[in-house]
Amino acid sequence: MSDAGHSTATSAPGVDTAAGSLRWLMAQLRIGRARAATISLCAIGATGGGVLATMLFGAVTNVIVDGTVGDGAVMDWKRLWTLLGIQLAVYLLAASLTYTQGQLLTRAVQRSVAMLRTRIEDKIHRLPLRYFEQTSRGALVSRLTAHTDNASTVIAPVLVTVPTNALTLVVVTAVLFVLSPVLALVALVAGPVSAALASYISRRSRPHQETRWTTTAALAGHIEETLSARRMLQGYNAEAVAARRFDALNERLFRSERSAQWTAGTLAPVLAAINAVVFLILAVLGGLMVVDGTLSLGAAQVAIIFAEQLTNAVRQLAGFVTKIQSGTVSASKVREVLEAPDDDAVQSRPEGGGFEYMGRHRNPPEIVFRDVSFAYSADAPVLKGVNLRLRPGTTTAIVGSTGAGKTTLTNLLQAFYRPTIGSITIDGEDVADLGAHRARTGMAVVTQEPWLFTGTVRENIAYGVAGDETAVARAVHDGHLDQIVAALPDGLDTVIGQESENLSAGEKQLVTVARAIAASPRILILDEATSSADPRTELLVQRALNRLRAGTTTLVVTHRMATAALADQIVVLEAGEIVEVGSHDELLAAGGVYARRCGVV
Image (cartoon, rainbow, N blue to C red):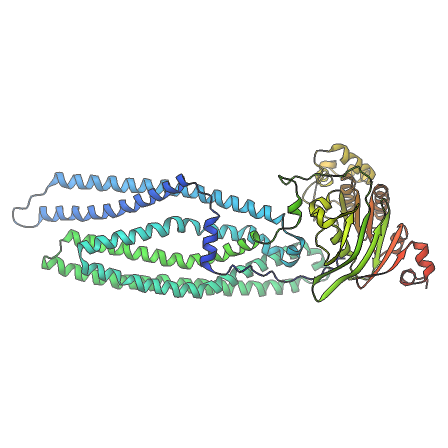
């Protein structure tokens, strides 16, 4: 059992403003200049086409009025059909430009989002162990999937909705002032009011969006834990406990969703009411101006349509402000992952990220711990001044009470953490200088809980040595898996996984031992490797491990005195300090802590 029980909440790296998150998100886009210019030109052309078509509508109305009102009025059919033809062509051109812009933008955005997911996936493999111990699995899954998708919904409005609506505001306002300054001023009254409302509502909405996404991640983590621990839940009749926790999270999510939707939802009806009042005033004033002869009927129609376009543009921009709150919250969550510090292993990993097994088939190394102290937090030291030498090709057993620092010692050897004080050397080279990747090269680890990924037995054994069928065959034989594999329906090609029912816990452990054998390690770490096995399977595991240990320097963490007795050297660790070192017989003769654990004293 790990003694690294120190989970804390992950703190955000100062990414808490919508504007900062939005700037960061847009910087992640990978749109070429030519594509961006084409998208912009299409958007400008479509917007200009919409404005021109509306002005043509006013001209058509004037032609009809001039041709039907008054004595001796004659319809100018040629001009009418010409204007209608031009208007239809403009509408078709604007529609085609909008379609082209949409297609180009969709491809660019989806490609950028796919690249963002790839970056997150790559980042996950470069994060240090501490990050995963401090962050819930549900939060990580949400950031990789839901947050990435939600953040991407902001991109298209930023690139198209905002620029086109801003352009509409400028052009339409200019045309309105040309047609009638009075009507233009009336139409513009809605702008400042709508902007003020949008700003106020966006500030009220963001905290609810934060709570919503935080609770969504917590709920996803709870569901994942419930599914993975379903046997334990059923064994303890604890389904009601899990259900109560789910209900509490679900209620909190419901309240945050309701508050966010209610806050954002108030904007649309308020703006609609403002626009209705403005439209009514425009209709009355425009009608009066037409009657007075200061404005033509066509111009009045154009003014009213433009005023409607103006208010629609303001409404869309205001609606986008509330929508952006959710997207930028998600962007900040994604940014937290991508800007988290990398594991030291990245510094020493070969170019291209490939794995190289330097030192395979070389002699087992000497491992030395010199004055090693370590603490997960400054006020809670775990190891204190540990001095230990593991001779090449020997087995060292670490025994001690739960929380004594045994697993922490193996974590330091694997370079998951660096010692607070002191050093660890492998064949005289400091692990800190080697870098985490090189230090782990040639290591194999078998832990208390057998870990299998969803795949065939062959793929699980060949994890890290893919394509080496000779190594797999040797591992199956040396790992005593022959009979187990033969009993499976598809042999080595049978699909297994962490939750599969076709292998017992002990048989899963044999697969992980075979994986270690296939890796031909120089250093072997066994952390309570036989604790989950039945007596017969434990014997098979021990035989396989004994064969593997013959060519490795082995570190064994165990509570079982029978397992420790087989080691060349036994280290007794208590409260982070070494209190005894020696062989089984030497420690029994000393009559100390180890002898008491064995029941001799």
